[in-house]
Length: 289
Image (cartoon, rainbow, N blue to C red):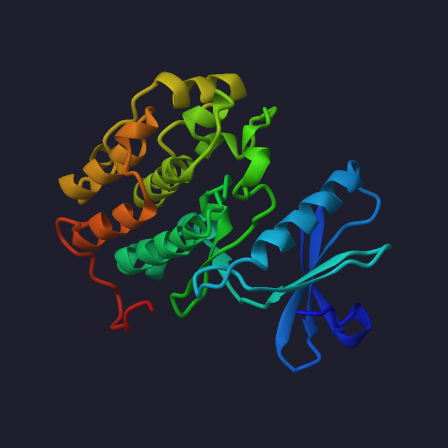
């Protein structure tokens, strides 16, 4: 869509700030509530952060799925470029999992949440896009149970034409606790790269901890390369052998041994009981959407 320009948005309160970017609530020209993301002033490596924001918007504008955050437009202002997104009131899966008293959605509507996470990622793969930073923090979950995957800043777009034959220098991109072995080895990613990170994410949601943990960054990378993950049922005895088997397959070091697509993961997840005994919520509630 053609840019509306920032002057056409009514900018409201600052709702989130991080090391690199900040997000404001705003009203769009058509009256809907949106979020405006911009790079903070005065940060180091600002030029790199601006490129990442432009990349995130480029990828987001290629996508259209209810389980992906909707990018509305990118305002290429020479002073303050801005990415306009839907405003989605939510908490990410990491925050929900760390809640001291547990989280109703993750604890009692687990399969519905995991399937939505998988569906959003599958849509990206159908468009030929690899997310490259799948982790609990990047799955936003609203209180109504709606899940949206976000943060497309380091996504890999499909390479077409003569560019496919050019050599590429690859860097280790992503978050170390969730990074796939082939990424560490600087090999070309594909859908199976995200499937590994999705397996780590599901493992953490179901056990409250990642399969590999170390304060030493190099040691953590070595675990992804060489250490077999423990069965999830060692940490949560209520988990079925079927879900344990599926997640450990996603965590295979060799990509050829993992599920070969998120579509396959979704099929298996739909058929797979997660708990031996379904947890009973403290109050009667409707299912997550």
